[in-house]
Structure formats: C-alpha cells, structure tokens
Image 1 (cartoon, helix red, strand yellow):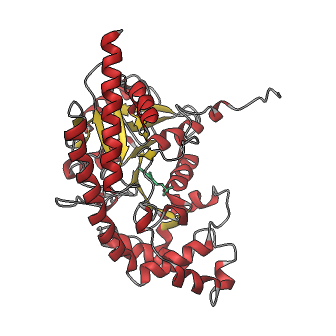
Image 2 (cartoon, rainbow, N blue to C red):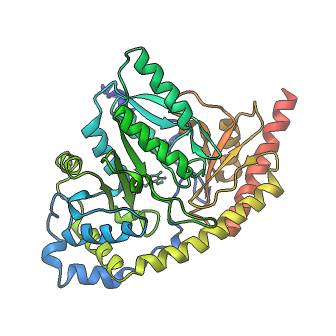
Image 3 (cartoon, rainbow, N blue to C red):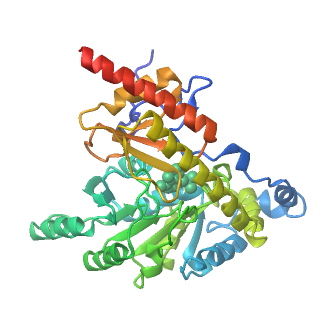
Length: 394
Ligand SMILES: Cc1ncc(COP(=O)(O)O)c(C=O)c1O
C-alpha cells in the first residue's frame, strides 16, 4: 500500500463519522427531521424553468442580489440592520466561517472559543493552525470575566493578542446555553477594546421553545467588530447549502474574494429567495419549532426514566442536549457500548478545543422522532448499566 504523505490537518478526529451500522438510532449529528424537509417542487420548477438562465449559471461572487435583499429583510426582524453590500452568500455558515478565518487569522494566531464549542468549528479552525484561547460558560453563557482576565494577562505579558472570537450565543452547540444580553454587550465592548472580530454563529435562534429571545450580538455592534453567520440548514434544509455572512462592507468583500467556489450555488439560492419572498420560511420555522419541542421533551423524559444519573440542562431551543455523567465516568466507552446497543451519540470530548472532561455526551434530538428518541435513550441507559457493572467487576 502506498504510504501517502498526508497533511497534518487530514488526521481524522475521534471516531469515524462515516460508519453507521444499518438501523442505528442516530443522535450524533444535528441533521434535519426528514418528515419536515420542505417541499420545494414549485420553487425548483420555477428555478429550472423560467429562471434557468440565472439558476444554471455561476452566481455572482457575493450571491444573488435578490437573495441578499431578502436576507436583509429576514434579519431585520432580529434587529440587525444590513444592506445588500453587507451580505455575502455562502455554502452554509461553516463555509462563511472558514472565509472569515482566511481573512483574519494567520497560522499560530489565537482564536477565542468557549469550552466546549461546536465540534466542526474546532475542526475548521484547526485547518488554519490556530491556537485556542478557551473560555468557560455558566448559566448566563459566555464568561466575559474570564475572557477579560485572560486578555489583560496576554497584554501585560506582551503576547500576541487574539484576532477573532467564535461563539454560538443562542442555544449553543453543544451545551444548549443562551448568552445573556449583558454578556453580549460586554463581548462587544471587549472586541472593541482589544480589537478582535466576533463571529456570531447563529443557526438556532429562531428555534426557541420558550422564553424571550435575546438580541443578536450583531444588533449591538456599532463599530463593525461583529460578523453574523447565518444559514438555512437548521430552519429549512441543510442540503440546500445556503448560508451567509453579514458584516462591515470591507470585510465582506475580502471574504468574497477568498471564495474557492466562485459564486456558490445559484439554483439553491433562487429556491431560498422564493421561500423567503413568500414567507413560507416563517411558517416552516413555526412548524419545525413545535416539532423540535416535542423531541426535546421526549428526550428529557426518557433521560429521567432510563438514565437519571445524567445531569442535564434542559435546552430552551435548538437541536442539542448536553448530558454530564457522574465525574469519573468514561463517556467514550459508554458511547461505544451505545453503538453495540444500537444508538449513536457523540462524546463530549470532541467539543473541547483542548483536553476536556471525559464524562459528557452530546445528543441531537433533531433527526429522529419521539418514539426513536425514547428507544435510543433506553438503549443508552442499558449501555450505561453495562458500563457500570463492568467497572464494578474490574
Ligand atoms: C453551531 C452550528 N453552526 C453551523 C451549523 C450549520 O452549518 P451549515 O450552515 O454549514 O450547514 C451547525 C450545524 O450543526 C451548527 O451546529
């Protein structure tokens, strides 16, 4: 066999995500709930019919003008003021984040993240060879006091300062926590004071089950230090691969010029334009939110019944639930036993930029219905008891 000389960044993180035994109940990824994938036959027919000359062509580098205008209208309801020149359409928000990293970080630069944070974002950041400045969370979200202390120390020691902060302030992946308004304001102040940009990754804010929504960090930004990353992946369909970045026009143009894909997917963009123009997207989000609430409730009930040892912070929205097992439990081993029982979950370690505690699990309730969720958690409970009895016997 050829001994290829792979780049370091190609090392696969953790367990392979490619191998699912058929029939496995999958709670490891935030995929869309199949029965609620939107029917876009009408929109797609129009795109490939009368609008073929546009939809089958390379899209403009910045995205379709109509879509950029619609995105401005869409985010205005969250209090974000944007003009089309502030909007770049991308292949999903992960791609937008990658473009922001290309524009702002050099290899070796520090990037601020929460501890834990979105596992795929860690992977993307690693491809840029960043160093992590990791910051904790509490019930109010991002710990701005810890960030301030660390920034002050770096400055006092004349160390290189971070250039970028990545966070998921609403229904955080993986912890489900929402950062308070006071903390968001402080984040913006610190960004200004220490001159770094904030990438606010906000795929879940509209999927709120209860409570009042908190203004996006971008809506608090008056100096252009915040880039808002959006996507239709969680509110329509991830297969569309349509997302966006909103920011100061000069930043957005630089990001556009870093694109490796030309103008992104014009066909999917046109479909999204129509779903936004007709407000179908808004009705879809309402339906989806009601559905996700029942999934969340089913998962919470199933944990109470089958795995009461887990400490859970009930998420008020989004797709994910974070479970802390008693200290010392080996979540990786429990997840392996879970696969043997027929359920796949993610170990929490994958969500930590450095060494993290080994007793956490991340579960998505988005992809499967209530019955499967209940069966899956029962299987996880069985896996947990097997783990415990093996540990006692050892
Ligand atoms: C925090 C976060 N950001 C972004 C995404 C989606 O990215 P994309 O728009 O590239 O599909 C996800 C999906 O799991 C996510 O959890």
